[in-house]
View 1 (spheres, rainbow, N blue to C red):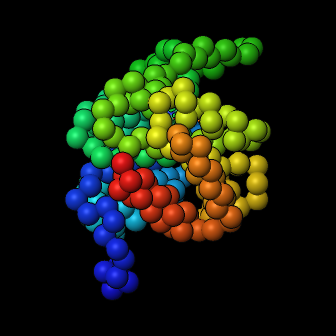
View 2 (view 1 turned 90 degrees about the horizontal axis):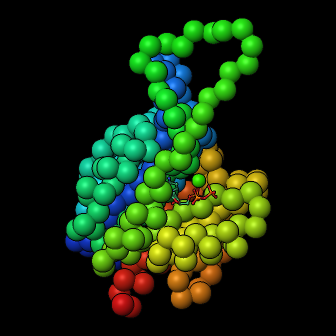
Length: 224
Ligand code: CTP
Ligand code: CA
């Protein structure tokens, strides 16, 4: 098999990956979510296993099969993801946060279906916790990788997030470019680390992107 020929550059490492969107309930039949399909995170999980890692995948609701050898934990809301990620954080070597976590959720979530009324409806939203920020604050020896999807000034915004969230690296995609971002099988990304390295990857499959990112991270761990 092809995977047996790959270098086991993450042999024995523990890798935690989050993937997919979150779903924030309004009532039993309605919710807020986003366009994330989970493909990038699942590609990373699959690749990490083939490089020899123990992989935990904390996943929002997606339509993808669990890659072989991956321990998958399903969550729905940002709050559930927060709790699962923090619970599994301590003994990880690498954490990669591809999940598209909701920044806001409805302030009230109703246990019975809302009925329509005359006139407009206002739904008050409140902020969710920033999971990656929490990980950055609690970082011991984990190599922490964020993802950022931007439509304007991708590199500046990504650099801000890298610093503010105490990350070791961030992968940024400019989702307004053809072939990048949500849903598709390809991506165009820039890998940026805390040392100021910036590597651009032209249009390629998400599998390919996953391979490159993990190679990078493995090299950075080796150099430490
Ligand atoms: N993230 C997170 N928890 C949140 C929001 C975001 O862990 N509540 C993580 C994402 O998983 C991603 C990174 O933070 O790895 C960047 O997400 P992004 O939405 O690009 O950045 P935000 O900090 O939320 O800023 P904004 O949406 O305003 O650009
Ligand atoms: Ca956000």
